[in-house]
Length: 391
Image: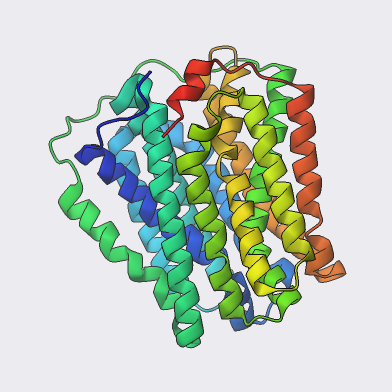
């Protein structure tokens, strides 16, 4: 199975859509301390932005089959980009926390729509090589994450009152994609008469699904509150601690580009156990550190550990779905929504009551749960499927 694909105009258009929405994810997550300072809220209340984003992902998971059926894959992706852009504009300009939470919901719904559509669009375009395309597009989206974090962090340090304006700097790229890269020759979509995949899923699948929730929870808990932990432990300013989160995105990008190639001869479960171990190492190094440079290195190691977890846990879900991959991916969207909604908020509540440092101990607990589930419910992913995830 070849490990490369032809990156044509279609690929770059889809990949740059994910770059746009990941700019938001990279910039907004670590900007939580800045938003909280603007609005004078508690950790728990600030965490409601993450809860809104998670609920939006759940709504998207429930609506994306209907949207795709009604409008087609390509058109659904553009609809998502439009919704995302309006949510991002609102988030940049509205002030009351009720409205910023609503804006986060709208932006995240559009973001999730783009991401879901990009997966099915690349799958349709590349066929059996779709996993390669998805992996490479994920690497590009990680670059968007890093650029978003860098942009917001730099503005916060040099002109802190204008950090929100950094969020909308990505909109010109969204407009360029819509008006100059959108394929206007696509045939009109006719809804299929076939229904979506359905049926009862096994106990093994749902246990594996719980492990998926745990891994996504660790990712978003880290992305949302690592800046607050760095600030608490190193006495760094909010702006500097936000810039430090760049290391998390860099680690994720490196892991997505090179991790699979280095470990492709290992079984999927073994790969997942290794990256969970890497994440645990990075976590404890970060949690124990009181030095900004060491914290930066530990965040990079965290990113390396997080980078491959989505792909590997998705493969495990598909393996446990008894030949119903679309149904498996649909339930993974609901799992991601629950994780995004619950983990940052729960960590915020714990942070208000016990301090952010103690609250962060929920992350290794989730890593341990995910690792135990991999051990107790193994998945035998074919080597060919693993190879197709290589970059």
